[in-house]
Length: 440
Ligand code: PLP
Image (cartoon, rainbow, N blue to C red; front, side, top):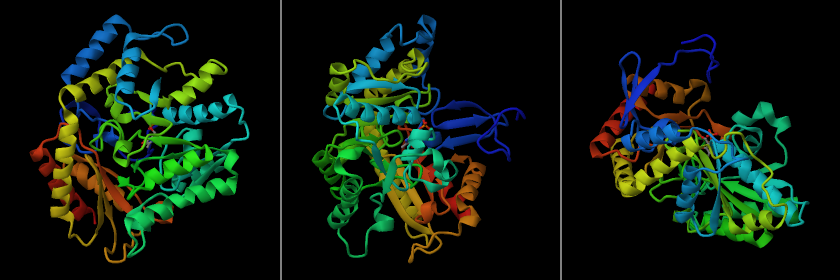
């Protein structure tokens, strides 16, 4: 490893990744890993997909870059068309960026500009949820609800307010039905809007299935329908962050389809380009677009690499491949199989508190005591030990934990490529069960 590159963690050794094929990654020492989390829910087509590589070669031969202040490009226009064709109702415009944090920043700024354009400049607050992650740039970090990530930057994070997530395993009371709990969790949003002033709130932002921070936590009951109603009642925009859970990961192209709602703004990234290029997008409603079009005539934003032709070509090729190969059906089938095998293999383990998620997006929460849901002592750094044990067994999973916001424990996130088969699922679950046993 070079001594000049600042890695995420300064101490320790990282293997050098040199290749990948299908669901496997290879390092320079000849080790082979099953990529059961697609990195961080990124590599939805696995590695080395020939159709995507071919599309990228062709785009590179034609044109690598043109600044969006001067030109549009075919792949950017085609990707926008494809995204709108498959978008939740009302989302009919697309803004292309380079990743998830950028998408969240742009969505927040669009929401604010919408109210400036429509003569409501008093609106200045964003409401988000605890145990959430929306990215690491300052606006996205302000929205995120993970104290560990936020604490030292707190003085720079302004005008955001947090409510509890809908997190049944940790927050639903014994004997409380899903409907009653969903209503109680959603009520927090209305209370917060009224506390801040109904005409002073810009937007509520949430992940339909919470990813990195909580470990594949979907809502229960009609939580998101209630959220949609509350936002509408007070003219607050709803931003759904589908950077991790979107683009097919949960078995429908967009996770919110399963909640029966459409947002005003939606962010997507990771699975959009499957890791073949850095690409993200904001999908916005006609109402917001029209406010810009009839007002100042532009969205006051813009990055040098927005709408990058190589990134757009990757997104286009990945999404066309998912359609052509009918991979969403495989996400549903193999997602059910993954859940079945996880429950069969780990369901009775005294340290497995919860197995949850949708499609090929599954979380396993590990606890010291299953009966009391007592988390492990954070000092044990259990999630780090499991990551290490999994890597030793040739398995890449995405563990997080150590008591996030004093609420939850350690969890392991699985987000394998959409191309997995039953045999792959079996190998993943077997290696994971061994790694958990060795780690604890
Ligand atoms: N939003 C969500 C829900 C995420 O999971 C992430 C990354 O994990 C982000 C935003 C930030 O995306 P990026 O790391 O591409 O900036």
